[in-house]
Length: 71
Image 1 (cartoon, rainbow, N blue to C red):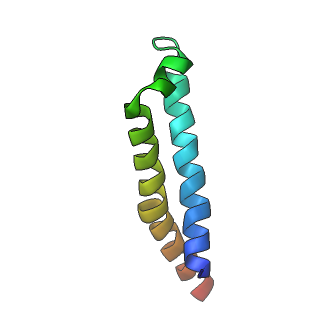
Image 2 (image 1 turned 90 degrees about the vertical axis):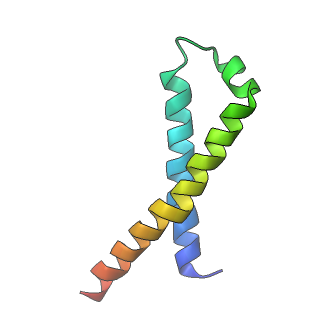
């Protein structure tokens, strides 16, 4: 696996997990944790956050990292 993909998965994966946990904690007063995790919507949103993190956020942060290294 290339360094770019390792970086994107690490950076975007961490961001996606963080956003998933943040959303759960944000809604915890209204909806209990066990109810949130029991719905398919939770897993769809988690997969979307992780996917966006890896493919979009990871890509743009990789590009900026390469640009900084080339200066």
